Length: 173
Ligand code: SF4
Ligand code: SF4
Image 1 (cartoon, rainbow, N blue to C red):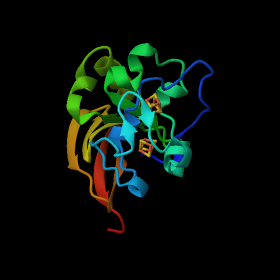
Image 2 (cartoon, rainbow, N blue to C red):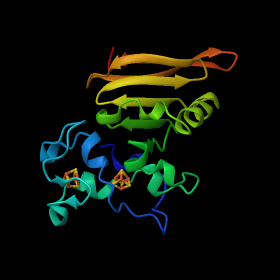
Image 3 (cartoon, helix red, strand yellow):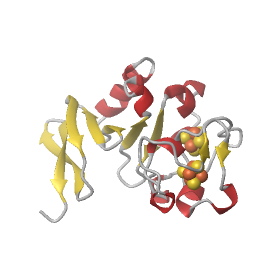
Image 4 (cartoon, protein in one colour):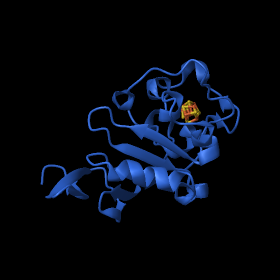
């Protein structure tokens, strides 16, 4: 699960998780042994958290983008879209963390066109993850980056003329 620095806004007044529990499936939550792509052992899918009162801080702090951004309509709610959207507050990169049970759902409409539109806007790549496997959408189109190891990070490389690609770099290399 991304950390709280990725969250750029408070929740919208009328947005509620309701029956959505997808963020309890698609992210690593080390304190409870949850791994990306598998339901957290504490999650009752569609209902909520069995240890809500004592859930980890990582879970308390998390809000997906749908919870905070009113430009994302009901079709972007994660339980319907089958992916969770977040934005890095510093870089404004968008992250799509897909439900492995519907790993291609982001390619459906209206999502694909809108994700491509955001990625083509410049300086804002969209990175689609299925577990640790990443695909980058940039002004140059789509690039499969493969598995991202714990000691790797993603870097935006400017090719000039408004052209950009995302590369994997080993930390410290
Ligand atoms: S993915 Fe978003 S809407 Fe769904 S449970 Fe998590 S925070 Fe709530
Ligand atoms: S501990 Fe609870 S809130 Fe956190 S991922 Fe597991 S089910 Fe979700």
